Image (cartoon, rainbow, N blue to C red; front, side, top):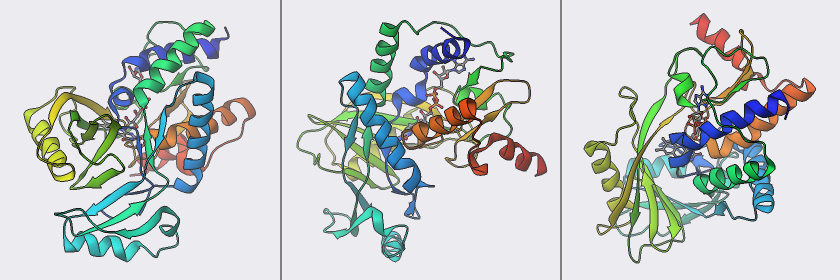
Length: 313
Ligand SMILES: Cc1cc2nc3c(=O)[nH]c(=O)nc-3n(C[C@H](O)[C@H](O)[C@H](O)COP(=O)(O)OP(=O)(O)OC[C@H]3O[C@@H](n4cnc5c(N)ncnc54)[C@H](O)[C@@H]3O)c2cc1C
């Protein structure tokens, strides 16, 4: 096994323990946030992601991507006005199927297409088995002072939080897995500052919180209460909590990922933010093209450009 492969394998093992990808709901939502805006470069990254997950499914013989329409719900007139004011914008039109009748207790609803959820845990576990069978698998940790030019540092939030990549905006998030009888499983519901993702057979993931100051891995009562409120609003009042988990989103600049060479050697692949399922495959392609063929990516994902602008501030 070449040095590069060995390093990838080492990172991959540690990745198994990584909270963020293992606990993520894996949602890809083309039009997001309070402002109902298309995710950054969605039209480029979504096809790349879907193509990659389809190829992985074929290789692993396991379904990991679950396409599902999204029901974007508005709970106030203000929120609804904002949403409908965006429906005819050229970059929003391709992602929605128009207004639909809102469920009881909501002012308006829009059906969004192109989204779904990635079973991140299944993806990680099955991929690990796949590489184990290939023999390209090693257990270990990359020392923090590693400067091998073939090392790719894909350390997630734990890397960003050391400060070695400049100022970060990592955010802790709490998420619940719940069971509920007879809740609608035909949509991912988004509203009330959160989301509810049906997993089948009455199981749902619901989240989440954003905490920028206390970046630990401890579930809190406050976080659980907040997510339970989201569950009640989006699903209903009767449910059972199966698990309560915590992860830290690796954020440098919003959910804009970064790749690039490091001054002391090695490469960084990080800052997937709240949208790793959408951006990871496309960013991995860009990194591979850069490493293997010298093709540099767009300046906005080039870590050297991020450092320049961070240093200029
Ligand atoms: C509550 C919550 C909900 C989320 N929901 C979604 C969602 O619905 N959709 C979505 O797209 N994204 C979601 N995300 C974001 C998503 O989890 C991240 O974008 C993504 O998982 C980041 O992946 P990563 O590989 O960079 O980091 P991680 O998954 O954290 O992996 C980094 C790995 O590097 C390892 N590592 C660190 N240092 C070393 C070292 N020195 N040597 C070896 N290994 C090392 C770590 O142990 C870890 O395994 C959510 C995040 C949270 C917290």
